[in-house]
Length: 78
Image (cartoon, rainbow, N blue to C red; front, side, top):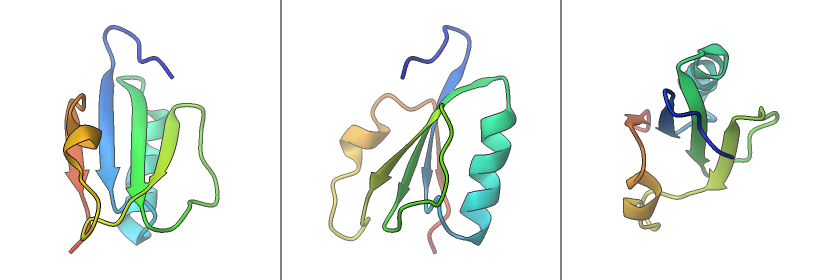
């Protein structure tokens, strides 16, 4: 999945929760967003062409590589 030159890559931590689902849906229709990386423990019921899901447990997994090329990180886990 390649983002266009003038678009942003966004990583959403907690993407399958109540708020995360709404955030990912809003980002998905935003023309300025080229790609979304959805990080969560649960697999989302639906993804889009510009959303890639990765199973992630923030208590155990190293997030540095997943954040490395992000323009924006949205952290929704409390």
